[in-house]
Image (cartoon, rainbow, N blue to C red; front, side, top):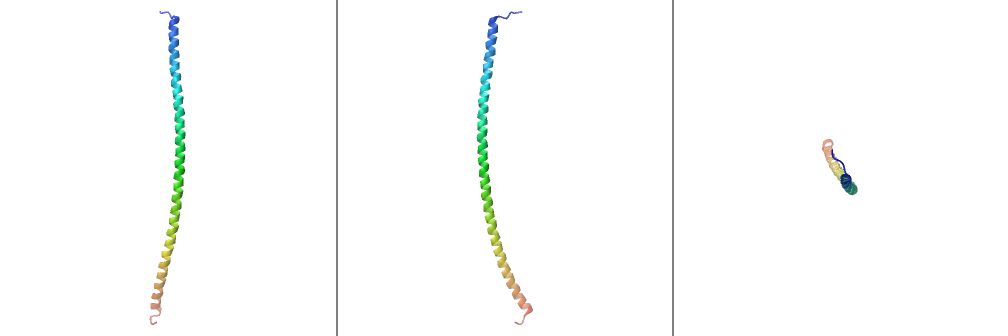
Length: 104
């Protein structure tokens, strides 16, 4: 068996310390990366919220336009039906006159 000397122990200690230092450096890098990712996520969340607000505004504006168009269409439809009603009433009046009073 070989004997362990103090020099061997010091080399092992320095090797272990260097490994721990590398691990701590990597851990620090990971923490920094996580913080960067959190900031990016927060930035994306705010952009998504702003986009959702804009979509809602466009949706409301579109609904207002559609309501306006619907109102105009209803007005035009009532006007057309009114004109058709007057014409049909006039035609029925003339047909009734000729049917019931053919001599006049």
